[in-house]
Length: 91
Image (cartoon, rainbow, N blue to C red; front, side, top):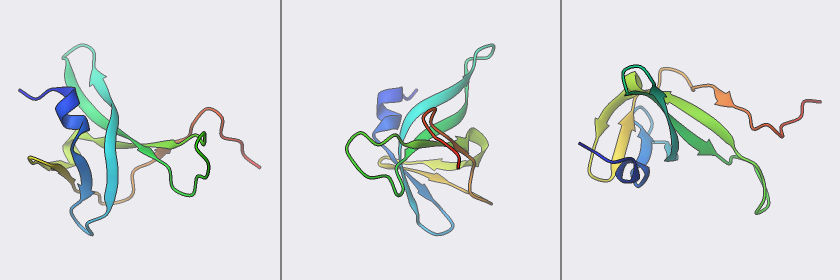
């Protein structure tokens, strides 16, 4: 068994190109079965300032290939969708 706090310490890396996505900020859990459906990662690309809101990336549990001692390796066929923060405005 692995604890959420242990998962959050592991860096998430894309297997195809070695891109470092960051660390887990949250999980999506199936309330009926109690299983993890997805990892939620905070993305701060292009954001400036200490108080800048970040977007979230969702990585499906089926995209995880390996959970190692220090990293979680994921396989992405395409870039997962970003969940925009509530303060995002569209021009």
